Image (cartoon, rainbow, N blue to C red; front, side):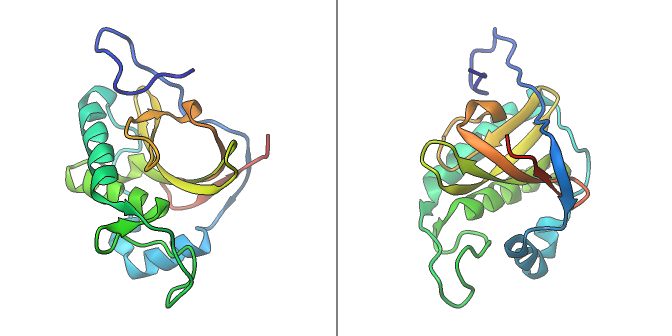
Length: 178
């Protein structure tokens, strides 16, 4: 199994960059596009697309853990904006994509370039539910910030089938089914 980011300093913590067979490149998913229309600054990806692992490690861990503690998981319900509305957490609650968006907002506020922090849509391979996560692209691979885990882990250490991922240019890659 791949490493978690929090493993001992004596170990050479590394994971491979996320590389899957791309089926096609497409525009943003509609729910994310709606969010970007409301919050364009939150979707503007800029800066370096890969960050230095050693410099970012503790910050990634702290933000992931802090947001997971501060935000209560509450699923979207059909209403004014409909089901699966992407937004920043409201009143201390949100669902998976809201957690991911908040983590990116906080990391960018701390100086991490937004181009290195991309959204991904996955499916849990054991519990069979759709899910959104934040990916951090580093000099030591692609790391997952997830509301289901307090540790930041390598992309291949989670039981997810990667469906699509945001690219630093704003387009999304859709992956071939394995």
